[in-house]
Length: 360
Image 1 (cartoon, rainbow, N blue to C red):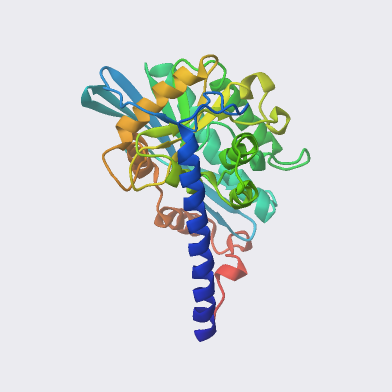
Image 2: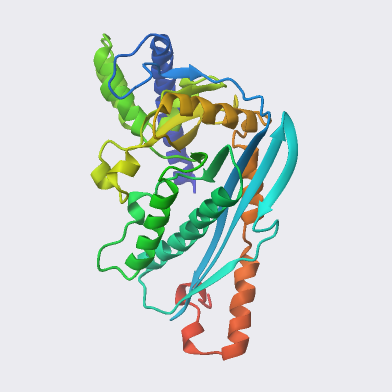
């Protein structure tokens, strides 16, 4: 243990030194952030843009989140999912709250008896959750007159969710992909996704390639080296002030890597917003068929109004409520397993995996 503690001293020193370098880089960027930037990938020509809170008069906002529990057994895999849409109606202040399908929805149980690999089972479980969330978003848009619908996470499926052509979960992926295409095909209201723990480095690369290349500085190489190992939220925590967002930018520079049609993915953009003083910026992905700067202003204004209550946690309150309602407890899946075992007996298909039932 003493050796580990000694190693931690060295690691702590490296982390502190790297954070100091990032602060210096941030100070450098703050010096140039108010100047007009000529970078091609910064459409609004500014690193940071002030956001005004919405007055929330006659605004209806929906937040959607989902819960997921999964457990693999010897020959049967169980997946439990739940999704909730929370609708906040405002007239200056919060006037009404609605829940779809209900405030305490019944989870959906999915049973996989196919011999899926560990990786495919994990992907299958995530696809079950995505199908439930996006399907609920589509139904809510059709049934409720909304100003903005916010998904927890992105509004575009991550490339890692795309299985191979011969995968056993390819059919399920195609269903999910079609749902995403449907919801992004001119949604009837503003549509965005908020990622509270984004690990993206897209904006850091834009700063490196599009901004630092055009800035005269003897420290350019050092600054670019720092950016190579810096996530967007880590960089922008120091650059953005509370109530500021970045310029919007294209969600992807290479539409061919997306599983969605080019005419759909071309209308998806992103920006970061620092909604509270002591929390990291949020990444926001949004759809805009035209005038993305105007749409970014409208969405960021509402998100800021929904997030400014807590100085240390900048997630919109409508998503916080959706998260609470969609959360699943491990006991729920254990109860289902026990009930299934009572009905079929102690059969090999329901044996627990050895790594989960070791006698030592």
